[in-house]
Amino acid sequence: MSSTNVAIEFTKPEPSLAHVPKHAGPSTGLKCLLAVVVLVALGLGGGAIGAAVVLADRVHDLERRLDRLGSGARTAANASVRVSSLASANASSLLAGAGAWAPGVEMPFARSDLQTVYCGGEVVLLGGLDAHGHVLSAVTKFDPVNERFDNTSCAPMPTPRYRFGAACVNGEIWVGGGFENGTAGNAGWSMSSVDVYNVAANTWRAGPPLQVARGDLALGVVGTKLYAIGGYDWTYTPLATNEILDLTSTATAAAGWSYAAPMPLPKGDLQAATINGHLYVPGGWNVQRTFMSELVVYDAAADTWQVRAPMSAPRGDHAVTALDGQLYVIGGEMWSGVTSTCDWGWGPVECAVNLIPMHGVEMYSPATDAWTSMAPLPASRFRFAATAIEGRHAEGAIFAFGGHAHGEVAVSSQLAYHHVPQANVYFEA
Image (cartoon, rainbow, N blue to C red; front, top):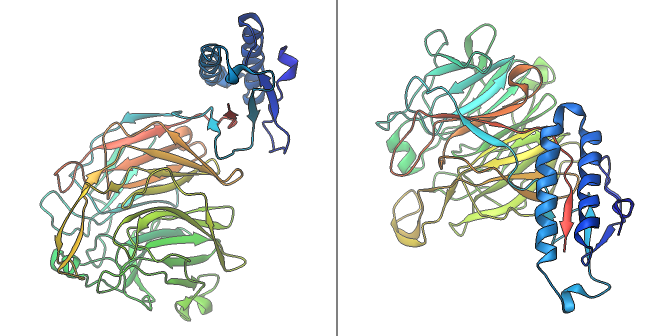
């Protein structure tokens, strides 16, 4: 085998796959390793040589594993390793485990069940619970360049709320649904009210209320249209409801919310992110009262949904954001493995006992319909908030704030994820 036999396409998926014989000797394996390093370096630019070395190390590790396969059926003449920019059911990504989390400055106070939105050039943290379980109306700004929090100059939300939705449209943050206090949250008495924060003016006003009161819903934006997706009704029954508010003009906004195509799967404990005119809604909690791994994607132009490849792990109360055209699902809550009697809205019934925070981070590639496990959170979290910033601010990063850990109502930690954009190459043995 020579290095010229390895074809790796970085720019667009091709249906053909390169075949690398498993019985290649060490010298030819080294040639392949060097070829991959050169290809990656050229494809990513001189500034990403470090990333190329990481990729080369992973290729070298793959070669060592192949050398250990020895003789027998696995080393038959027709056995091969397939290298491609296309994912398949048995493929492994060269980017698995990529990126790194770094601790950031502590928040001014512990906080969970909040929302954070990058809007008008500002990272804004809204509402949630404090360490004592009190519902907050506090609004805090975070400067990702100087790593500073401003907890005093922001006008508070007109209505305290937690487990609500939030999204940015035209320099304004729209918040909707959720619960106003702990009693309402335990009983399922969610709100339909919507408030709108003008980031530049630091002012609030009331927006058109939702048609369906909901908690633990997702708010998402495509263009100038705002969507309110899923969540729970007053009996804590997951909903497939999808409402749309057209903010293209004053007249369309005044018309209020209308119904769009519902999700194919009802679920709550949601977050959503937008990539290229599509809303991605992964995971959540379903009508069987279990966490889900399913990903559903909404095409706003066509008003249709698709079920795409599921995550490797079911989760709810996770953070969802988009960076460099990829979807990131971070942390979340998973089942503890036991059940007990619950009386939250639907009860008393037998339900899963959860409250187990997760470390796992998964990245979804829309181009290949495939998930890749990325660098895990150094500290497990659920019911926290995260937002991505691209461009000159923070050089492209994801910032995560607060949340629940093991036993705490809220924590004050902040974490930042950094990942150099790289071509995603898949190997299948």
